[in-house]
Image (tube, rainbow, N blue to C red; front, side, top):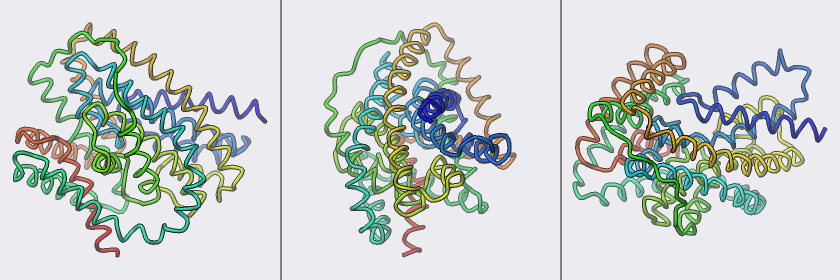
Length: 398
């Protein structure tokens, strides 16, 4: 049994590397495919092995998916905020550092998860009922912090409300509106930047292969505080957790990359714990495991945490290798052509996942993103697209 577990762990790492590198291919999509195949093609395979594969794939994905986000400006639904400081560092020849910073955060998150998982089980199980009532007010406070940190506060408020209205409109289109998150976030944070890069004929300078010098304590502290809470509540992602984590433990541009890397992996890891505690979860990977395994036992949770630990360590070294490889190639690449190809690929993926409505959403959100960027405020204000709907959801559900 041990050999099979190791084999499926390694296979999951391979799958996670693939889903992380290809823009628009989300872990939720692969998880759904594996769930459907488990009842037919994979029916002879022990469900535990499939759960191991999904876990290692999901954790590996949280490491690797920052590479296309930073190098190409093509975000996953959990890495949209990494584009903001990551692309700035890329244009300064520090793309490798940007990737390594997120990898540092993700690797530290694996150890943090193991250290605080069992205390969190005891604490969260007691206070879960009271969490929901506080969330909208925390998010309102975060929104105010975003606005008042800007020089042009009116423009920041306008962008927050504009993108919030867009988010409300899209998320109320249908019951399964989650599939429209891909074109919504891709347009605001991905294709808008890609079009600007194409228009400006952005040239990426030679990338320096240097290790970043940074104090990891503050960003990791923020991630460790907020990630367990956000993992147990629907409607909130690692992007929002990073915003609040940065509010609690203020850090700089490089520190924020560590923070978003850590929250991305921690939120994924804690989603498995929430499945054990309350039989509910907010990530597609954990939902897939729930459909295959059913109720999560204590022994299965321990196995999942072991898989998280080892797959995280292996994924860290894969990320370093790939970051170095792509950094060396970037200066030889026609970035305008690469941006055009990436934009085309994202459009195709959006169509396959979300259909014609997804294309319309992509176009609208792209022009909204371009307009918001032209106002000269931080692009983090565009997180109103998720903040505003979440605030209203919790205010009206209390």
